[in-house]
Length: 148
Image 1 (cartoon, one colour):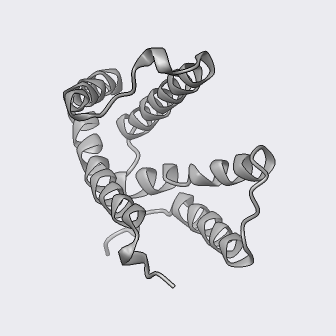
Image 2 (cartoon, rainbow, N blue to C red):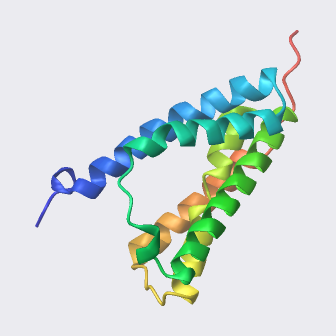
């Protein structure tokens, strides 16, 4: 049996966690200084800087369906980012809003089960329940304690 550290996907996932973890802080710093729309524009500029380093298939090799999926994915990613920036701009704490919006994989679980007919194991369902509980606990607003 392979350990997680020997799987390439695991290291890609860890780099993703580190990258997106740092991004949460940068997004909050950005929305503290400029509008959410401006942060969204600069986010896309950052994506464009990355484009020359990406391997591409020839567009002519891609079906219309795959192009549609790619464009829809980009649109939904941008829409979600914009609403996250609006949340931060409206005063959300980065330490709450970023992890809360990080629960988006729960939607992926529902879609994977219903559309792709994936079957999570019992332990994976326990993980989903823990994530839901974490989201509930993160979203609870508490009154600040007054100093005596």
